[in-house]
Image (cartoon, rainbow over all chains, first blue to last red):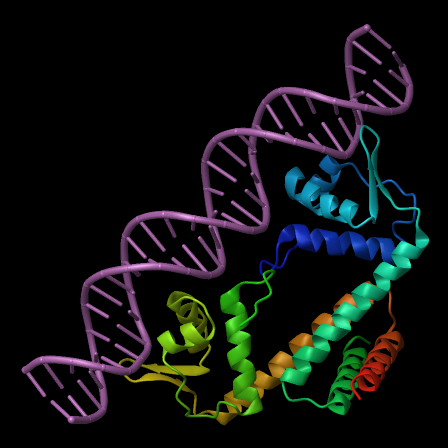
Length: 124
Length: 124
DNA sequence: TATAGTGTAATAGTTAAATAGAACACTATG
DNA sequence: CATAGTGTTCTATTTAACTATTACACTATA
C-alpha cells in the first residue's frame, strides 16, 4: 500500500478501514483479516496495525476478541454516524483551506463544479 | 500559532506563507520578516523556519539575499500559478476522499452546497 | 491435549522532525 | 570600521513513528 509520508501510517490505515466499513466492503459483524495478515497486505509492521486498531477499538468502531479476531461493530448507527463525521471533516477542511486562499462561498462551489466537470471530460 | 500535529510543522509554515502570498498580505517583492522574527511569531525554532523557506526558495517562490532578507518573488505569474496549484490540490484531495466514501460526483457537489448553506445559517 | 490461528505486550533499534545553541557570512549604516 | 541586522550552517539532543523480534494469552479443533 502506498502511503503519504506527510501523515502517520497508522492514521492512514484507520482511514482505509473506515472507508471499507462505509462502502460496505466491511459490514457490521464482519471479521477483519488477522493482524498479521493486514500487516502483510499493507506492507507494514504488526505494531503499526495494532496501533490503528487500538484507536478504533477505543472509538467503539471495532471490537476485539482475543484468540478469535477483530470484528466490525454490530452498531449500524455508529457507522453511519462515522460516515457523517468523515464527510463533514473533509468538507470543513477544504472549505477552510479554499477560504484561506481568498475564495468566496460561491467561488468554492464553482471551482469544485468546474473541477469535477473537467475531470469527467478527461476520463472519457 | 496552532499546528496540526499530524503533519510536519515546516510543511504547515509553507502553507501559511503561501496563503499570505495569495491573499495579497505578501506582495511580489515584499520582504518577509526576519527568520528569527518569524520563529518568534510562529513559536517555532529558526531551523524549522529555515527548512520551510529553503524549500520555497527551491520552488522559486521566495528569493533569499544574504544579509538583506527573504523576498517574495517578483514573478506575479509564479504566484497565480501557485494559487491554481493549491486550489487544484485541495479539490483533488477532497474529491478522492469523498469518492472513497462512496459519494457520487453529484453527491459531492450537493454535500458541499449543503455544508456551505448550513454554515451560512449558523454564522448569522 | 497438542497445535495452529488469533490478539496483546514488551523490548530494542532506526529514522525524520523539531529543538537548542553556537558560529559564520554578508549588508547597511552611524 | 565597528556594530546591528540579516541569512546560513553545523552539531547535539529529544521525541514520535515505525520496524523487528520475541514472548505471552486465548480460542478452536484435529
